[in-house]
Image (cartoon, rainbow over all chains, first blue to last red; front, side, top):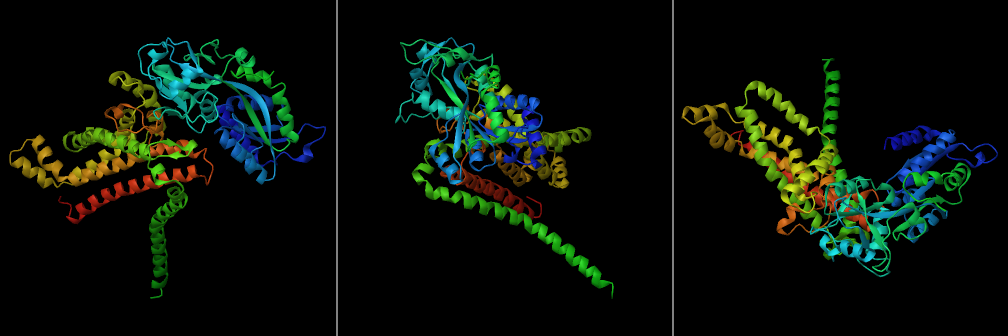
Amino acid sequence: MLGCLLLGLAGVLSGCAARPAESAAGSAAPIGTIENKGSDTLVNLALAWAEQYMQMHPEVSISVTGGGSGTGIAAMINNTVDIANASREMKPEEITAAEKNGFTPIEWVVARDAIAVVVNPANPVDGLTLQQISDIYTRKITNWRQVGGEDRPIVLLSRESNSGTYVYFLENVIRVGQKGNEALFAPDTLLMPSSEGISAEVRQNPNAIGYDGLGYVTADQKMVAVAVDASSPYVLPSIATVNDGSYPISRPLYMYTPGEPQGVVKTYLDWVLGEGQVLVAELGFVPLK
Amino acid sequence: MSKTTPTCWTEFAVEALVRVAGFSAIGFVLLIFLFLLREGVPAFFEIAPGNLFGTRWYPTFDLFGTLPLILGSALITVTAIVIALPLGVATAVFVREVAPGWAREILKPMIEVLAGIPSVVLGFFGMTLIAPLVRQVFGAPTGLTAFTGALILAYMALPTLISVAEDALDAVPRSYRDAALAMGATSWQTIWRVVAPAARSGIVTAVMLGMGRAIGETMAVMMVTGNAARMPVSLDSLFRPVRTMTATIAAEMGEVAAGSTHYHALFGIGIILFVLTFVINLTAASALFQKRRRGGLR
């Protein structure tokens, strides 16, 4: 958090410097500032990238802020940031809006993420199928006993509806990836404003079930192994299982640039997709192969 | 005589300045209200009334039922006042009528310090300490409930409630107390039968102001009430999560596309909230006004 503030400050202080100019291209290392904004899922990773890159290239200053995928994409459409971080693909209407402003956004897959389903460590349930998770979140299953646990009511936790994780979980788990499935989170799902809200509640409440990005699961929450259906193997999320495709709830993470990146932005993106991948694993995400 | 002209001029300038400053407050409120109307009124045309006052709030899927949010706010505000009223009045009575002078000197500033605690701090406190306690003591499935929110709100409304109630007690003429005591009333009888009833309208004002404080509170509420947009109509609703109007605006405004139906709906909620707060403050003001008209003797 402090790092975020400091970086933000660095961005503000150097805000009077010119934006990456085309003239900077050439043999010399490009000088400039990069505004990077978007997904809260990606923000820690984006910060780590920015910090390391700025250590190696003090002439470049990168300011990273979160706020959500939609916020970052909206800022890129309005041309106030150089790179938008997103944990979902851009919607067609967002692309249209960008084209109206005179550019075509370009998509870069920068890492992979898995969504872990978490419960209290005291909960004896080890594995759930996608269908069971869907039934739990739509209140067809209301007691842990029905999935092999103790006789306890189930308390549903979710991120706020503005989080990319919310939309991804809804479409791929609750609706089990089916088009036309209109299932929604049950109305008594607790919407937590932050990952910390989810982990605090899961930590202290044996009734709770929640979900969050693999990078945000702390040691005091218990991850549940997930199976595509009852006859498939139950798989715990990990870097290995996401990469080999056996863990069913995983997704790519994106960066979007307004048009072909140039100068300092291009150099930075190349680094992120190359050497920068080392940091991905360190933060609990899954590097590209 | 030549001296009067400059004096008149400065007098006039200062008067004008003060007048402008005074009216600007009204102007700002009006401008804010106009802005709210401009951004929020389209919601009432874009969304069918059946949807707008329905029971399902899923803005991502064009379901804009505000009823659970309005009832959620009402539930925790009323509960908070039910908790804060006896506590606040009792504290005011103690500080004003019972406590010795030195205790009053310590208590009054301490109560004012309470008002200065940031709501985020209270929210965090509620989330990590009070919520687990509520779950264990009341056997609720989760500790993030309307009741937890009401406890925090009661705490936040207390400083306002206490200071206004105390002022009301202070305004009760000395002669009332002397008369009651001279008639042989005990000090408890004096307080309960004479002083408190005499200060009744002031205490009503205190409650109204505390309520206005509670209904508008956002951060702490968002952290401890669970934010589930369920209809709080069953008997156990107090010990189930709720979602308030303020938390909804705060949580969703950051992500919403400007000019979309969802955006207008959030401002629509803002209008509802503004009107509610306005009515509450108006009630408080009219209670004060009545008191003044009767020359301070209620």
